[in-house]
Length: 153
Image (cartoon, rainbow, N blue to C red; front, top):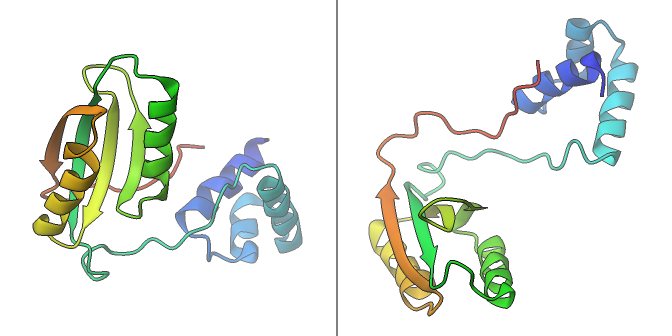
């Protein structure tokens, strides 16, 4: 990736609907050149996905929780970790899941339509899981900044 690719990506990640001609004006390339670069960046896997960002409240999922989760053993069998990771990947309530260092093993960002729904989710996936010894839920009061943009320029 060169400097122009990074600038294109910086603009594109903020608004994927921005047309190539406008991006081209900002980086000094033609629309066709920008489109070729974006196509290459997609094929190389630099652009992993292009998604719609929804407003959780208007979409009916206003509750966001950050969960700190500790597994039963600091070194659980790989099969348990793999199964847990697979479960977290497929659950639509899980927006993000990180295997981390420190006092917790995983940090999750979980969404729910209500606190009651989150409670049922936590019971089903954390309290009933024999490999989870502890979890702490931090309820989000204000979404100050949410995003996945990378600092490229």
